[in-house]
Length: 198
Image 1 (cartoon, one colour):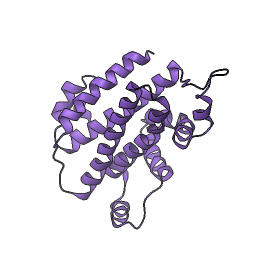
Image 2 (tube, rainbow, N blue to C red):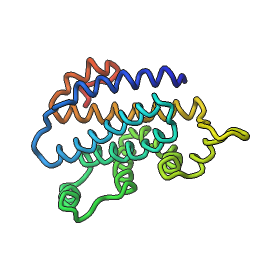
Image 3 (tube, rainbow, N blue to C red):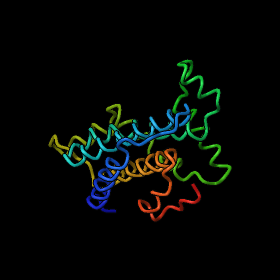
């Protein structure tokens, strides 16, 4: 668990995605457009979060993790889990599903396949994400040492932040390339991923 190494990986990935996603073409159907828009937002939050970490602005970067997570989950939901009716209701502005509904739908379907460690991991840090975003005690407690007013984020805090953000970015980037019909590029970017199973 080395924060600096993980941050370096995230910076390298940030450069890759900026180059590859610039001008990417997404199919014209509504499902692809909505899900890809959310994944693109996820990647933008990731780039901003990493930029803030590079500037040692830990509280501001931590505040972006929950919106990044929510954008990623909405992208996954509208791509693979939302019914046609839910998609239509969202597009028309009738009904926007809550994050709880989205996570519940995704988790219940993944649990049946025993494939939800990702959802379990993020549910384990959900309170922390909310506290960081909304300025709760987790943010306030990291503003002090015994007596000094200072950024007081531990190496573990920073590692979890950069690692979680990088994981979300990789998922959204993979989904975006897959939607754009550029799945073959994933094998060179992520040799650890079994691309044929996507």
